[in-house]
Image 1 (tube, rainbow, N blue to C red):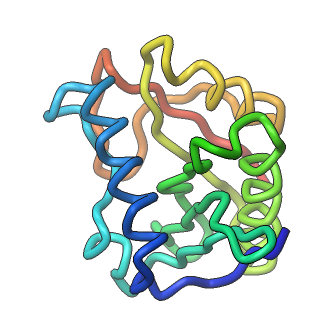
Image 2 (cartoon, rainbow, N blue to C red):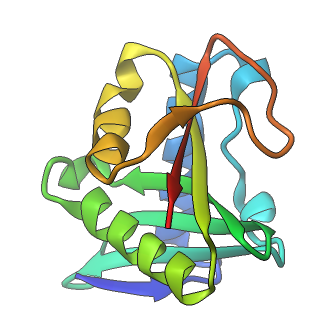
Length: 151
């Protein structure tokens, strides 16, 4: 698997992000949807990666800098054709490594509280992410859970 910084201009990544946004709307009410669209992911404080196997897009993930010591994981998504193959695990390992290289001391995330998000929560817990209170601009929301990891 090759994980590379992506400029979000390719049609494959546009389809995957649209799939991600559609999935969020299926499982979360609009007021609880925190997934970013392509324009949101192009902001200067976000680094976006795509993961490829044999020229096929298998997943993506992003890292948003909240401050010089704190990053947020955004837009973790595995292509539906590549679920349960370890794609998300490898992308998460990559994001954690970059966060450490940047000198972050904390990495946080928001995900859904519903059953559909159980695989994501289990993945993050397997990397020692702990449940926490809302961070940054988030507020308490019964449809969201917040997790953080000290680096």
